[in-house]
Length: 252
Image (cartoon, rainbow, N blue to C red; front, top):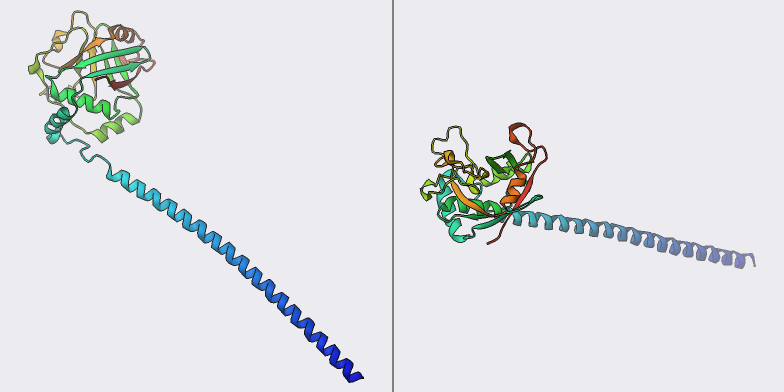
């Protein structure tokens, strides 16, 4: 009888041990599977991030490839560049937008280098957020510069060049003439600055500027706006105390 009971007890012990092993095995298997799932999720997120950054790098490379390699324009290539640009971009009417109102300008076709350069600058957005930075009442208002950090950066990107004078066209500095500023130092050829312009505000004109600066357009509408700008208060170097910001857009 004792022997039979011993056999029964031994059988029950083995049965329980077997159940615990199965449960433990099942639990371990479940924990392992859960860990694998977490690991897989992390790997999936990592792959997603890698793909995202790879796409950004691809787009950045594409943008670099789309950069116009014609800029900055070297001085020795300026004339052929502007000649070709002028043929491809025949517009000659622009609008100067200010808080005082708008000024419309017609650019002369017989000053082709200056016209092409100005249209190119407008299309590249150079003039946006520059100023009428010089105001001399009864003489001129001058635009195309600013104290914004973006302005010298834009100039550097476009090119460090001068435009040959185009005096042969014979345009004079009469009231409302649209003329190119120039650097006076070491500029015996009287070449023009590509970035700055001025409008003549003297009703009698400024004949002393003839054959010294290239007139390449005239104001066709908005001289009353120019007159308002000519009356703003200025500080040193005839720079307005309150900036007169400009944007320039092409009309036709």
